[in-house]
Image 1 (cartoon, rainbow, N blue to C red):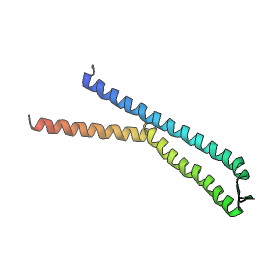
Image 2 (cartoon, rainbow, N blue to C red):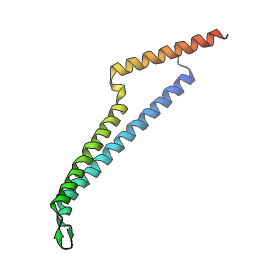
Image 3 (spheres, one colour):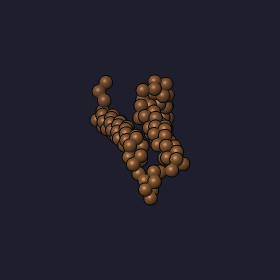
Image 4 (cartoon, one colour):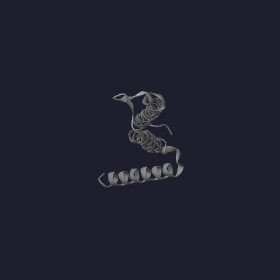
Length: 118
């Protein structure tokens, strides 16, 4: 059975949306890596040379900075994980089969409703 032009266009739109989702995820990963490498470099060296009135930074300030250098990648990593799960949701077969069942169900409902008014 040949697919109609409308079906083809719908598949094309879904494919384009999927590619955009993947591109967005990879941009997110790239930003995560760049920012966290910069944070590591900053904490590893530059902060050791910062002084206030000629004195090195206080230990409490350094502990606060360390906490933020830990929390940033952890919290961002959680967000990145959620983004990845969303983007790769198609890889989870139980979700895919559920989605296909729902689509079929709603298409059948639409067809049934359309047939009512013929």
